[in-house]
Length: 76
Image 1: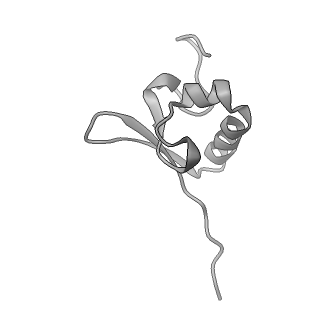
Image 2: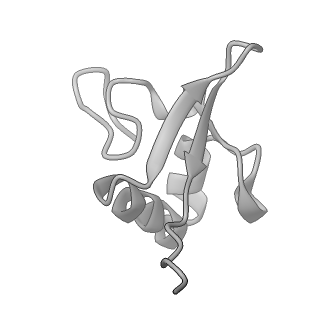
């Protein structure tokens, strides 16, 4: 989707085909695959990243995994 000179709105400088979703119904799919097949979910990930609720980590298996944290409202 992006050429090598462009920056992904989800993965930044890491290529979208090298980052795998590690949650929900799209677990195990690359960000690139989701951007092509589920544009609404891709937009959701972009929104979460812009809110600071999205993180990419490189695991021991050397794969990049994308996680989204849901911020819970404080209970009084």
